[in-house]
Length: 273
Length: 106
Image 1 (cartoon, rainbow over the protein chains, first blue to last red):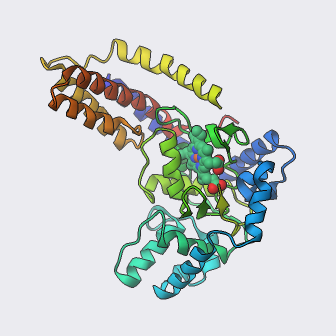
Image 2: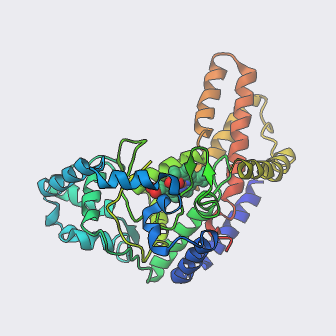
Image 3: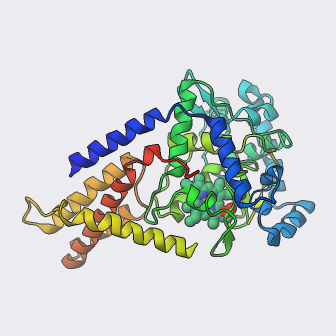
């Protein structure tokens, strides 16, 4: 039995390897086309507002929150002060914060790995202070939010060019579409095929535009959190064991996930229920 | 959504669990202690799931809990839980097949 599983798994891995000849742009067009077909009246640019592009009911509340002082404003200001205090501008990769947000995530050919904005922030923090920074909330989320604010209005523009990048993209795509956990569901089962439908008290957000406002503020958390914090929460909802934030698997998935939002505006409207 | 979930679960239950466990997995083989054998099967299955990044949320907890039950002399419940944990690991292994080449339906 074990032998059989091993055999089947290796065939699966081989299949995975061939799909590494990934065409991100063709994937993205099909992805956008899918959302256009399920919600023809929603404009592409509106996907930057995440679930509020679909959820007319709570959009008013969302806009009211943005018109006032959003609950994360203080945290983002603190992130600015922390960026300064820890000397993060001394790291070349963060010296121009707006450019840093637009550049990440990217595939580093020399290192052979996907580099996320949070990964770069944590590395720089470690270089400047000798200390370690957590990957999901607190400092990393505040600083990442402030950096991302500097790029508000610019567009998500993930590049998948080298063979290594294509392989990482293909792995991330598979992670997104694979069924996992006790409910035997994939990310796409909720955020692609059933986007806009209700799951208990929530309207399921479209994966298109999922990464324009990261790190996000969530009323349920009462704080900012990174994209990988959210990945962990959704894994748990699927009754799958979450992976570590900033694990290679999550970074690959982010590479795919962000690429699918290419062309959408980065926004500082971080509020979500 | 609920309907979708139910359908998915049902399909899954029929297609994976039923056939899979019946004939091919006799985890009592070669041991006179059914709990030990069930626990070993659950633990090795779980280790493989973790390695493939496809582990289920509660399997680890179930294994821990089964050990506790066994230690407190509740052998029937311990065995049942260890078997349930093992079943989870078999289903997770089933999901692992093809996971690395998963893609969209469009």
